[in-house]
Structure formats: C-alpha cells, structure tokens
Length: 391
Image (cartoon, rainbow, N blue to C red; front, side):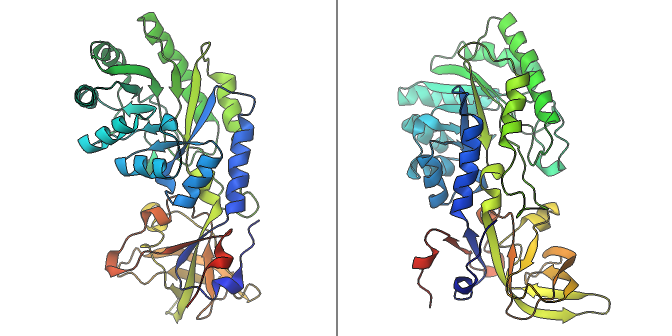
C-alpha cells in the first residue's frame, strides 16, 4: 500500500502526478520473476503508457525492453537507457523520418502492419544501406471482451494484417532485398482481466504457425502483444497484477518451436498502479438535488474518465475521517464531460482538501493536454520528493 507524504503534498502546487517508485520496482520484479525460469520469454515495456524518464530509466536498469509506437517513443526509450537491441517499433502509420531514425539506431524489430509499409521500409533500408528486421502484425480475430475503444484484434480494424493476407505478405517479403522476417506479432486489446482471451490468442497462433510452416515459412519470434489489465476498483489492496497466470497461460497453451522466443508488450500492468494524480478542492457547490466537488484538475490532467468512462478511485487525503458524502467530482474545464465520477462516496471534501486519484500511472500524465490554455501537470517521484524545493 502506498504511503502518501501528505505534508509534502501540501507544499506543492496542484494538480500534479506522484509516482511510488518502490511499488513500480516491486511490480517490475514480479513480472521478471514470472519469467525467471523461461529464458526465451522477453518483456518490452509499452512506452505509450508513460514515457517519463525516471520510469524508462527504471525499466532499463531491470533489463526490460521497449515497445514503441512512434519515432518519439523510440528516441525516448533510447534516451532512457534501453538498448536498441531491445526496442520494437509498432504503429499503423510510421512516417519516413521515424523509420529512418529506427533504422539508424538499429532497433530489434519493426512490427509491420501493411504491405505498403513493408515496401517503404525496404526502400528506406536500401537507401540506408542496412537490413530491416520485421515481424508481421496479424489480426487474430480474437475477441478480448473489453472496451470497444481499446480492442484491436478483430478482422476489420485499422491495425494489423488480415489472416487471409498473412501468406501473401510473407511471400512478398521474401522478394525484398533488405528485409529480414523475424516473426509474428499480435495485440488483441487492453485491460484484459481474464485469461480466456489470451488462451484463445495462443490457440490461434498455433493454427497460424502451422499454416506458415506448411507453406515453408519459419519464424524466430512470437510477439503476443500486451493487454493485461489492473484492478482499478481495489488499487490499494491489489496493486500488482497476476503476471504468473498471464505467462503460465502462454506456457500451457502456446506451442513454441525449439529455439523460438516469446515476446510481450506490457504497459498498463507495469506502471498503472504506481502513479497517482493529486488535485485540490476549489469549491463544494450545492445544486438542487446534487452537490459537486469542483477540483483544480480536469480532463486536461486525467482524460480517461471523460474518454472511456473509466473509474479511478478517489481518496480524500486531507480529511479521511470526515462523514461519508455523495458528490459529483468534477473539474474546471469548460466542457460538460469534465467529470471524474458521478455520485462518488467519499469523506465530505472541503475547500483546499487534497484528493488523490488512484491507478493513474498509465495513460494519465502521458495524455495530458493544454486545452483551455492550462499548464501541463508536474511529476514528482517518491525517491526524490524530499529534495524537491517549493515556493
């Protein structure tokens, strides 16, 4: 359970993000422990979840690779100390400059999502006088049973390559001079809490491997993507995901060939529970039938509730013993959707009280914006916050 340095928080200008680096280290250690007896299993941290330098530094120190979806993320991973040999680059719309950057850095693999992209990578590799290692992202047509806006593995989707096009793109790649095919890549969605979708993915991979081998194609790597979720409803009592069950699922179901490697891309499950967004109550406003706790943070600082209807458990750090009340927790943005939670039950907040939102380490600060000309939030870290100067 995270201990919040409340006295220090009171000195800081809100809203801000706070990261429990001890919890992050425990989470990373748990993930590594789950594959400790499987040397052919490799974890890539999904940089899109949170690209803050201290977090990338911690991943690098623990030997975790990087899954990137932009040239900026590739550069951030490299700057954070993650070796190019452990960087994979996905994304349906890679620009030429991004591909050139990755080629120059000699990253481990491009996860290719279309024939036109494959052709461009080959052309740019020729110009650079180098070879591009690629894996093909295949849509496995597996239903992840998750939110419509974060499912990615269906046949009709902007991401990936249809199963029917798998063999043709392998054939095309075999004719390109500067392409080396490394493997298959998949991603079925995010915030998956049950193992059944991963089991279904593994079964589908088994079928696709058999098809490839029948056509004379053999691959070194199988990348099963990410998607493992976190417990948003009980963050303080269940802070570390069940990595063991996740990896055991693939070990039991996926039939890897001798010498074949399994790669995965974990983001939310690695960093989600270690981050918090802290805000102050500006006003307690009484309506006709409701009351509103109006905060100095809005969807410019934490977008997920407005975008997905997501719940981030709120705590009143300042007055935890106050009587429990029912309030709508809202922000100051000039949009009706700027609502964190309706009819939330928490100790009655008063002006100046600090409210902390749990489970904000992934897709929180990274999605912040300057809409309404607001300033981006500052980030603080548990291992350095005692040295932070306040004014």
